[in-house]
Image 1: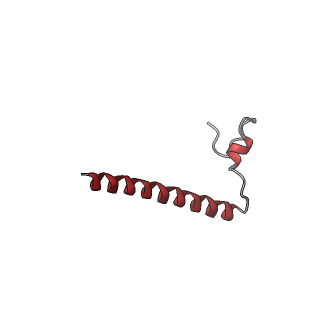
Image 2: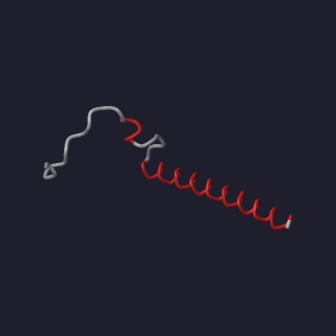
Length: 59
């Protein structure tokens, strides 16, 4: 039973490491495509007045 417990813990840790690595790679790819490594404009401009509606979307 000890071997199975160690295997489960090892697999869980490997899965966590792989998930973090994939998230970091995706964040780097998005930053490269944006051409700007800063956070998204939502985070940057949060708290200001809302933007105007797009033409044709008024209710």
